[in-house]
Amino acid sequence: MSARSALQAAIVARLGTVAGLRVFDAPPLRGGVPYAVVEEPVLQQADAVGIAGRTGTVSVVAHDAGERPVRLRALVAGVDAALETMAGDVGEGWRLVGVRLARSRLARVGDDRWRGVSEFAVRLYRES
Image 1: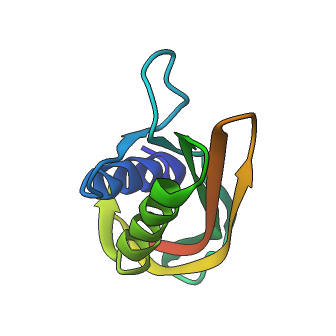
Image 2: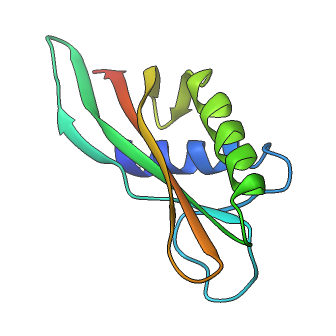
């Protein structure tokens, strides 16, 4: 399993603890709102002697409907809180050593649809 796959799976599992939010690793074909999609992480190599390292970003996109984004704001806050405290083993020997909220935004995407995007800077390593 790659660092990318391990990280995405760990984030999906972690966000499963956010109350009222269904979490997927790809957009669902069916189902209602609210839900969130953990997008594919964008990673680059950051190796050192004896250590495989990766740095990059991962975005979580939350979707909801309604006249106002009140529920979405709470869900995005739950996502941010859950990931900012995430650290440790993410699988296949990869360890998440840093997660930082880089940016977050909410936007209307239709008459009654809303989207909240939280982008996180991440650092992982695996000892060789």
